[in-house]
Image 1 (cartoon, rainbow, N blue to C red):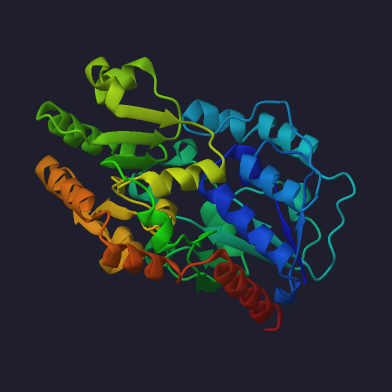
Image 2 (cartoon, one colour):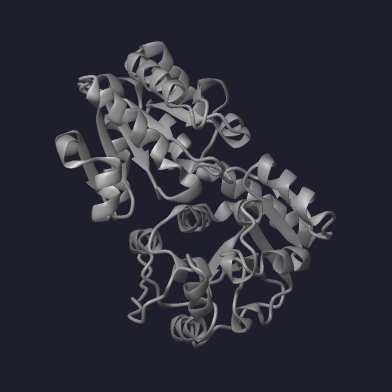
Length: 377
């Protein structure tokens, strides 16, 4: 069975959770022909780091694309990215000899595949990652998921990355015609108790991802500054976009520069090393569709402190340490608890065992079964 993945998320993201999801699934389908899925790309150019790394590993060549692609994080950028510039990028990146088989699937990697990529497929699949824009009332061109409802209503198969996301979809859209499958994210590698215990762990808090808006990084920075002011030796490591001067001054400050390290555009090897070396990962987000860093941290035996939300409870369950969002004292208490429990061998083993339930192989296997089931209906 041929499944074609379109170019959209690989134009939108140089790196990030959604493009990582599709790259990992693509890689599993390549590595395991027994799953019965032949993965294909509808394009031959991208700057996405995850996909380039995976294709290189599998001896598949892909070119870079030079024209900038603006991520739609503002109304103006949305107009540019969903307008002529997107069409130009898609056209340049598109595979000139693209000719899908009549019984193939198109799996949309985001919510507006171009018309060239839609042409010629028997069935359409889409993965719905979250309903954050709808919950925040980002309407019209402010909504980076512009086109999501239309493609969901036209899809034959709808993958939701969590039950919370599936519940949101039914609540917001009502009945849809496609077959809905809840299939969680996975993890690439699971460490060992010996690997974690071999490290001389410092009281380090790791934060991964974007920081603005609903990501709520302010909760963590306020808690840490309070700890630092009291003389705590806890350190902060952040992974994500570079800090602007104003953001640095707001969240860190020159007085505490020595307690903070930052990484951008890291490889998977470096990212997982940072997970292993941290005492804990802190998730401050007020809402998520899944929260992949939670699983990635647990897979390295690292404690997870997360805001108490339905999705963090769904993903981390009993192995997470939770705090009340917006309550600095609650977060400080949870951070200190996480640091205290970071090296407990029983808890490390529990985190590793829990994370072993989630692998990209498991994700890909369930997706392959869903393609087959719907194809045979």
